[in-house]
Image (cartoon, rainbow, N blue to C red; front, side):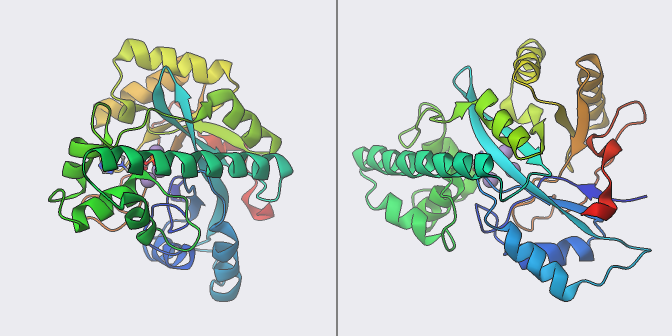
Amino acid sequence: MLKYDLHSHTNASDGVLSPSDLIQRAIEKKVNILAITDHDTVSGLNEAHAYIAQNCQQDESAPFYLINGIEASTVWENKDIHIVGLNVDIESAALLDFVNAQKETRQARAKLMAERLEKANIEGAYEGAKQFADREANITRAHFAKWLVKAGHAKNVPEVFKKYLVRGKPGYVPPPWCEMKIAIDAIHRAGGQAVLAHPIHYKLTTKWLRRLIIAFKDAGGEGMEIAYPQQSIQERRLLADLAKEYQLLTSQGSDFHYETSWLELGKNLYQLDDVTPIWCDWSLDKK
Ligand code: AMP
Ligand code: MN
Ligand code: MN
Ligand code: MN
């Protein structure tokens, strides 16, 4: 059976590995189909494809395919909602316009975060966060978190989020992102499929989760993630049932950013028998 991991990050956003190193690791972990889905950018994908072309010989018993993806930041009901786009054409003008607009939004938001931190007597946060961003990577809260830890403002990343980067805390900026439909339209115009990322992550009651799924579907989305590495079978079942009820295709991904003891590329990712995976009609040999 082929192993799919359709959500992962490189240092083109807040992942630690370069695109080449991520591909190498995915192959070592016996992932067959990997999607790179960096936050609001597709800039890591060319390097990843070049690495595969130079270093990976297709072995029929262990095929490897790279899916062009993106994780788009959007807002719904004043909450950050992430939408994964799969199989996007990375040269599509609609996608590039979208990515450029998101980059500007990220840039302005990072500056605003730094201004707010300055009011809490933390200076130099923008430059600090940038030090942790490779090349032209989009700056995320994860970059701020790493710098804040290094500068001694908290012991570790989870603590820094709680203390500074979540709603009600000094560095928090309400989601400045576009509505779901804008991201979904850009993904569709680039020939891709739109997947609601990590639905449990939003900490919604089931009633509100249903509302989110309905809004996502109304905006044109076609899939939702139901499987992550660290998850109870009950949670996977609940998400699968919601996907069935709302007639959404299902996806899975590790959301890998860097090596930890509890999360790995391809780990504990599988579908339940009664759902329709998003890849049901993909013809992989064309990619
Ligand atoms: P942003 O898209 O700039 O809001 O940053 C979101 C990223 O920050 C996520 O993709 C995670 O990588 C990271 N993140 C968010 N919340 C937490 C948290 N509580 N602890 C650690 N990392 C987090
Ligand atoms: Mn991230
Ligand atoms: Mn996410
Ligand atoms: Mn992610």
